[in-house]
Length: 181
Image (cartoon, rainbow, N blue to C red; front, side, top):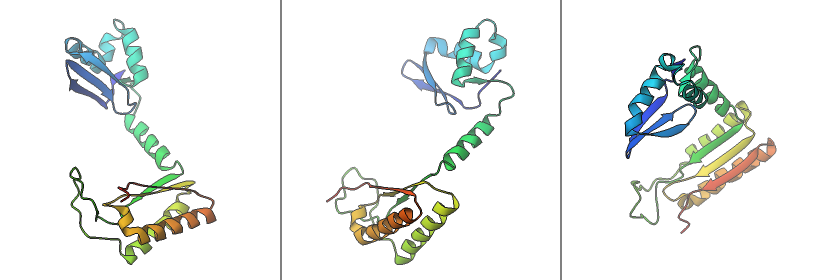
């Protein structure tokens, strides 16, 4: 066995969080135990007999892996699985402008809106990407500034997307982040 290349040890209060980036598993170890646990995980063969139940658990959780495991292959497979899931989300920011300028907002609001050329390119992208990638569910997500300030462009692209998806038997969903004022 060997330690996963994707283990992270993060100081937290009076201990450390042990986190594996592939399995997304984690546990908290006290400051008193964290150095010993890190040593066991980093040299599992040295502790195989003495800490067998712990190492079996670390194997299940992904903190240690068998010697022949290529973790990069696991990451590539997961990437391909998600990329080829048949779902696609496109987030469009039709404008950087906003009508509220909330005190907590970090955006620099500019009076910029999608050009007609950019709208045409978005439509072309939707057609091409959905068909070439055999997308089964398409989500069009609106964000901004305040997307409703570019209402006509928002409606144009949403109607186009909805009609295109209906014509090609693709599930269509849309959402928006808005201050709705």
